[in-house]
Length: 137
Image (cartoon, rainbow, N blue to C red; front, side, top):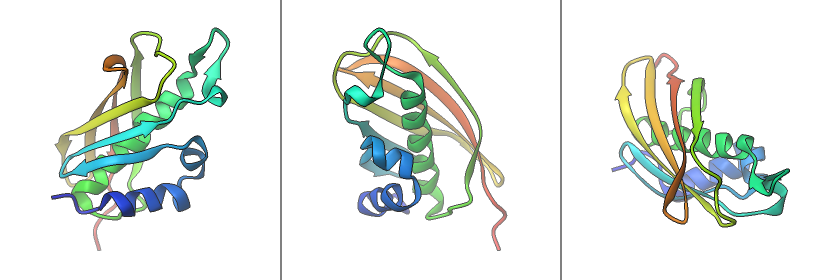
């Protein structure tokens, strides 16, 4: 069971992650070590050539990783990204993007997470990242 509810994480997006909130990103589901988020399709996220810009997919992946980490640790605001690697695999369709993330390894100080981003069930990007976990008091 996740240590953060869907409602609570969506509230965190709205109050603590203004860029994600502005883009419309929301958490669809969460469980222990897994999360699924959605980036609604918008012409504001397009780049020349009519494809969704990479920074929007990177933001979606990073917010998904944050959700995965909080699902395991609870609301720890100082868990921060220390690395993010993304591979863009194909041009997304003109539709919402869905990010599915899961934990690879959770240690005392670092969490390693992977995220696959889908467009109409086709994978369009794959990301891995590391989050730094602050020392517990």
